[in-house]
Image (cartoon, rainbow, N blue to C red; front, side, top):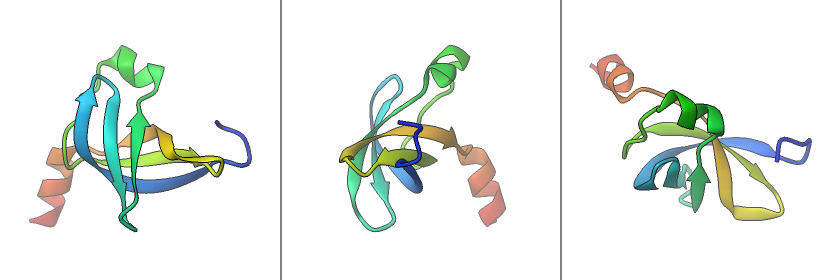
Length: 81
């Protein structure tokens, strides 16, 4: 999926389905299934509802994508205050 045809968009985790798997809602309202990378699984990074992620999607299948980067919830809430 990391070819030239893939593009990156930001979204928020709406539901956590399991380890490394979540429903992500994009800013335009579109929802898709996002799966984490093996690197994230090895580092045991937690996935939480409300977390902002960057999703890499191909134009061929817009129903799923690879979550490439996650922001920390604590970091977001402290920057809003």
